[in-house]
Amino acid sequence: MKLSMHMIANRIYFLDMEINLSDSDPPVLKSARLVYATDCAYIYAEGSDTICAAESGSIRLRDVNLAEGFDIIQSVFDFYDDWQQNILELVLQRSYQDLVDACFRVFHNPMIMFDADCKVLGMSSQYGENDVDREWAYLSRHGYSSIQALEYMKSYYPDHDFEYEKILPFHFKGTILNCEGITGALIYQNEFFLRINVIEKERPLNYGDYQILEMLLHIMHQHLEKKEGEKEKNAENSVFFSLLNRDAVDDEKLARKLDYAGWKVSDEYQIVLVCPKRTEMSAKAAEVLRTTIMNIFPESRIVGGENAFILIWNLSKCGSFKRERVRLLLEQTEADVSMSLWMEGIYNVWHLYRQAKSAQNMKTWFSGETDRIFDFYKAAADHILLSGDMEDMVYACHPDVRRLWLREQEEKDGLFATFSSYLKHERSVLNTSQDVYIHRNTLLYRIRKIKEFLESDLDDAYTRNYMQLSVMVLELYEMLRKNQP
Image 1 (tube, one colour):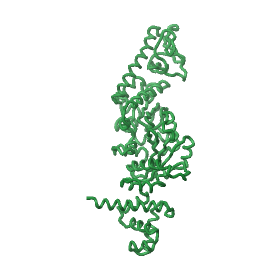
Image 2 (cartoon, rainbow, N blue to C red):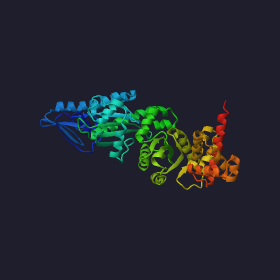
Image 3 (tube, rainbow, N blue to C red):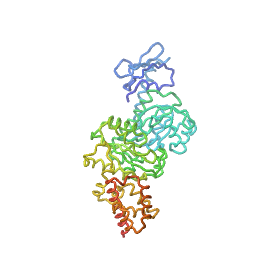
Image 4 (tube, rainbow, N blue to C red):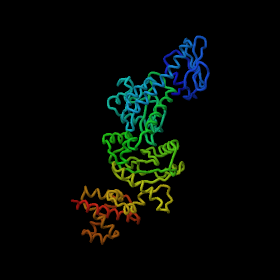
């Protein structure tokens, strides 16, 4: 394992020494030598002291003879080699608690590891429940981050997204969080996988600690790359990934994840798909694109795929999707952007994801489109006609019509049947009144009530055709469901 001078100093911080190191101190040192050698720590005597020198500076061990000083520095290299091997074994075994405890030997400070859903995977057992701050106590008791702490973090650092940013320092002075340190995220295949926090308590954290944390995350990333199968790789990942792939979801974990975001299961959601026109991106390019999307759409949650980024947008929380911001995104990168319909219920995002992908594939059919973002809404009627899957057709129905249909199942006041007839008779009040056998004034009252419920414009020809097709699909679905044995 290659070391920096800061990493060496951190290991022997308890000795009487004088440190003179530059900020430019890369981990390139392979061993200790009594004669100068490239990429090695040069050990020599100066009076009664021993000097450990490299291009980035020096460490003076006071009142330590050369033989003893050389043994001390070389033992640091030996220690880190053994530690790295131990960490590799623990990562392979997924023994995260043991891994966190093993890291105390290099950080000499409290450390905690979270998964993508803010669940504790391990926290330094060298510290008791009340040894750090209130949040540490909460984590010790409950095993998950508190919503209050997450809200405090967002308010204290409004420009940072602690779920996705890689390595950065933090400094909190509050009643819940009262600590400082460094935090690092493991991003795998453009998706947040886990986070490690190191809290400054026993000794000041420095550049060497950043390097160790970066190495630790790199080791874990390499381990993930060796595994096969997308589901296995994402087994510990966000519940949002599971929702988008229609995998089984832990309801309690999902509820906690939504609480952290301030969302509800019953909120209205939409999916926006960003697909770079370059079919293959380097890890760096993918990281830059993710950061750009995060900066432009901080309200959304982002799930990364191999060739695309998926934005989960909460309309109930954030209002309509901010289409004007797409121009800012497209100024940064060439990408195809598509969006789904909107629908109530977080469990429906799988259908919305399919719609966004379908819109991406059907975009070329609409050569007259000039907007850089393509709505599934514009292709929904064609999608229904081509689908052949009744469930898919039902979820692709016009959102207003679907909501009116779902409302009818609760209210049973005949508004859906009235609307069906109204569209079938091309909005003729006379013909509709005769068809549904109600007085003209009663019909006008119902039509006014329906229009207040609808969000789309009935004067638009495509919208009317799409709505009428949706009504036909839902009526067919009802008929098939009733005739099932």
